[in-house]
Amino acid sequence: MTTNNFQPKADPPQAEMTKIVSLCKRRGFIFPGSEIYGGLKGTWDYGPLGAELKFNIKQEWWKAMVKDMDDIVGISASIIMNPKVWEASGHITGFNDPLIECKTCHQRFRADQEDVIAEHENWHKEKKEKTDWTEEKKFNLLVEAKLGVVEGEKDTAYLRGEITQGVHVNFKNILNSSRLKIPFGVAQIGKAFRNEITPGNFTYRTIEFEQMELQYYVKPDEKDSVRHYEFWKNFRMDWYKSLGINPDNLRLREHNKNELAHYAKAAWDIEYNAPFGWKELEGIHHRGDWDLSQHQKFSGQDMSYFDEEIKEKYIPWVIETSGGVDRAALFFLIDAYSEEKDRVVLKLNPKLAPYKVAVFPLLANKLELVKSARKIYDDLRKDFAVSWDDRGNIGKRYYSQDEIGTPFCVTVDFQTLEDDTVTIRDRDTMKQERIKIVDLPQYLFKLLNS
Ligand code: GAP
Image (tube, rainbow, N blue to C red):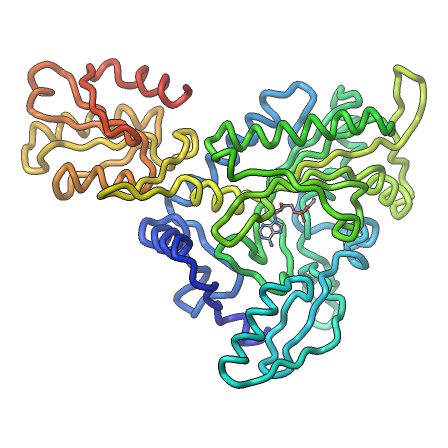
């Protein structure tokens, strides 16, 4: 491993990104990976709030894609698979990025990232140096792992480059253990790994990341598959919008023929309007019969489906939706970030917010107030993610909760001791209402699910 890998290079200055990266570190959303050892390029760790945010995103995805669907099941496959899987899937030969190296400083770049290359050339120019590039060569993105207990006899395996193949190799197992009939889908969430040449833009491009994918098996029929393809494109766009992403910041873009991955018959990206440009958030791919045919060929196993309705055997086609959990988390954070007069607010959809509600005693040194607030806090924690804060004054506590996106703050004051009511303050409108303590759970359930 080169020392280059241990020197995280700062992204070009982007004021908004700088503020978001700083908020993420300060408030415990995202930290640089292995920071005390100088970091490791392209790796990030999720702190207490980041872990909650990611968990909420995955939970919403699973609900929309598995729980609410009667034709989709979920699986959880292994990260390390038989290396033949990657031969069959085409990743060993076809999962490449074009690489060039700067002969002056030996930094490596993706040859197709013209803006980054131009920026690098300018950087040398400013130092009165010239840039000389090596010839473009193919660079395989699969991350190797060595398996075995005897040194020198270890076998090469790979950390999965996409979570997809765990589904396709189990196609028959899933069919035989369920009563699914075409069309049906198999969903999965899990980590994938890629030796990215230029990780960067915070968590946008990393070497380890999480994907949430659906493989939807359909009849091998052009018209029918296009109908499903259109459905999933719209469904996935609507999912992001339903969780609060500003629709003006989302678009669908079709891949040019020369951009298509080796497995794709067609591909559209859902892109987000990030401070660093329109960037891919999720890919919707028409994979045709690529995966099952390849696995049939390489494993010698029959991967076909017998269609009872038409009494015919065929290899189904696949429509795939493939999103990144980390990219979704990043873009939800960027989209929610707003600055108002004297406060910073993360206007996260309540379903995604790490804490749903914060509870405060008006004064930390009044035992009766603390006792009553603590009881409310303990009761609410049975149903919600709740934050407790008794530091500083109420204004500072609101500011602190706004900055991490907590939708509601409950304050216990002297009136509470008399009539068992509390104030509840809305993050976005900053309006306060007085409600009975007993009504709090119902009230919150309603607001959080509206
Ligand atoms: N199974 C298809 C597939 O993996 P992809 O377009 O290569 O397709 C799908 O990846 C999604 O995974 C992307 O839209 C992105 O959200 C996420 N992703 C891919 N590479 C990533 C990386 N290096 N860092 C973070 N997320 C990544």
